[in-house]
Image 1: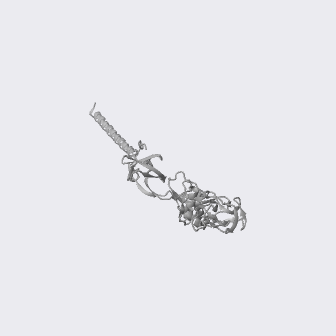
Image 2: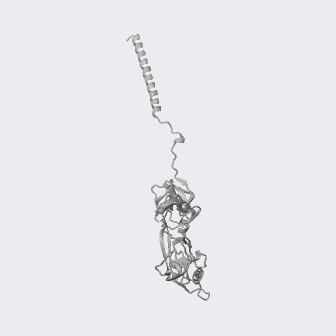
Image 3: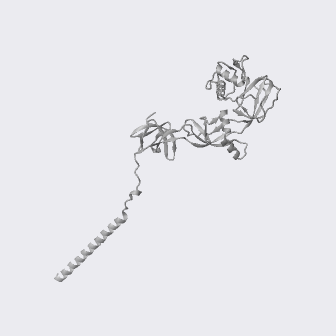
Length: 356
């Protein structure tokens, strides 16, 4: 091999080495570029998902369980009041369209007054010391409401009961004292504290018996009703009309004649009836329904509550705390813990409440 040939081969080798190095450099650069294109950029801190804390503080608030409900008021129906005793009408104060109030005397029979009383239970036994029963309880309560010195909470006839009833009737034992017995037939039961007769079928001097209609009333009604929500907190509730609260029984059925009369005489009821389309059906009166006395509840995340309504708890600092579930609203659960808590655990997977 000549010197010239050797030099040519060495030059060719150097060119191939240079080309190989250049190709390798380009490939390496391409790999880096590809890596740059494939790798995801870091997520900005402001867009990162926050980590869920294992413990969160709790708050307390006043809970009223306020709901917008409807009070169903049935239509008025005619009601006849018959005489409780036979005799002759010797005085007649009742007149069509003139209200008769509890504690008033609409007529006299055989010279003795017939006292109208709005009793939750009509009087069915004579008023004599020692008599007991729901009718006597109603009598004592109504006499006390009217301002007489009767034992309002008693189901028994006492001397005070007789004295109050005799005073309301304006009668005595003939010697200026209190009668030892007052007959139940001298009391005319009326369904509300104030009633208005549409007609009075009897006249002065008429003879009557226990089948004789004394008064026809137009404003007699069945019970007022409100549908209690199934998730209502089990405590006393009231309905609000205007700026006044009225108690509602736990079953939502209002039968108390005094309460019924108060609701029907409210300006809110009157205004609603006047503005509503005329109808022979029941009145659906919108009312606000709430707890009679607000309660203070603890507000916790729903996910922190374990169990159900019969056996529920939360965990605070790893320890279970029994709670009563009051309500859930807008992603919050209201509970009543057995002991005060300031925070609850949220990582409660796999935990359970102690048996109650």
